[in-house]
Image 1 (tube, rainbow, N blue to C red):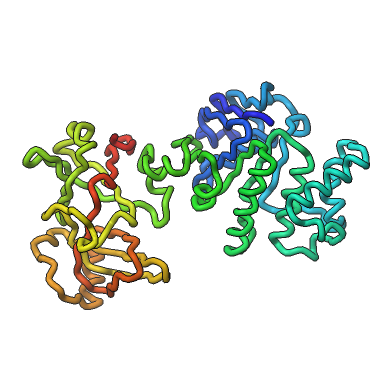
Image 2: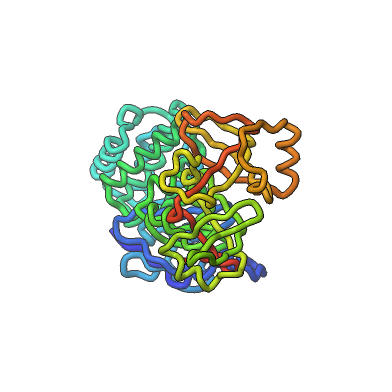
Amino acid sequence: MARVIFQNVTKLYGGNPTPAVADLSMEVEDQEFLVLVGPSGCGKSTAMRMVAGLEEISGGQIIIGDRVVNDLPPKDRDVAMVFQSYALYPHMSVYDNLAYPLKLRKVPKTERDQRVREAARTLDIEQFLDRKPKALSGGQRQRVALGRAIVRNADVFLMDEPLSNLDAKLRVQTRAELIKLHERVNTTTIYVTHDQVEAMTMGDRIAVMSLGILQQLDTPQNLYDHPANKFVAGFIGSPSMNFVEVALTAQDGKIHATTEGFAVLAPAHKEKALAQYIGQTITMGVRPEHLVEVSRLGGHVKGTTIPVTVDIVEQLGNENFVYLLNRPNGRRGGTEEIKLTEYEAESMSRTGSTLLTARMAPDVRLIRGDRIEVGAAPENLHFFDPQTEAAIR
């Protein structure tokens, strides 16, 4: 087993002055399952391929265990990689596909057989050892690809979006199998995905990347509760966090975040940090599950709720996603129980209304055009610097 250390690692391609990976410094602990996550083109796969030796490093160092591996060829790095495509040999049986990496390394036949069968037991594919890949399902092929990495007994597993070719149901099942597999083999693992649900459910820690830069490295829960900046806040969580531009004002010894359409109370524990922004416009964020219909929001302060009109309701059975429109100066119109016509609702969305998404319980009965008030507990509000987009804490 081994740690993987990135020390100021940079990757430049050709004459492009913008690095694909910029000054990346982080440490993957021994036996840790670390997920690299971010949108397409953020540098996550490039970072992993540099660990594997499939991409040259433009600057910095990568250390595996106690060795600097910058100049080592891939075969000498003691890493095993699982690709997005299964990359199985179609003319070979499952057994031969698993044994082939060991055969290349001239592992004795007896030991080779033992390691292949042990990996097959671990992945529950013993019954498929005599089959060809074409006779397997997608999930079974993926397990064979994983087995080919396991038989290597490598210090580090590298997985590049290994579940992306599976359908939704099989992806969930295989995700659970991967978590259990890591608990059994306890090998240091770097897992690349663009799917933040995969990242949140699988990783001991998650490294969020954007435009080649590491944005935040933390546990899943800390990323969710305490995002370092606006990008992380919007990327982690589904549906993503609502963002509204607000002006900070001081009134009666308290700080309020105000727009033309509403005013909400800032959390007391952030007043000291927010004081320097009074009179300025900053970004406020609130997660959909924290945006609650007022009758269900305990202890809300009168005058600090958000009047909205229901635009769309998506019923998912166990929950509803409700899309809400807050009209500028909407507070003056009150929240009397009237229905808007479809034309009026569409007109609102075209005239600068703020669109908010709320995750609500399935027993909240709403239809398009309903006028309600929603609010969030002050401690669930997030604020971001208007220039740096860093979280204000």
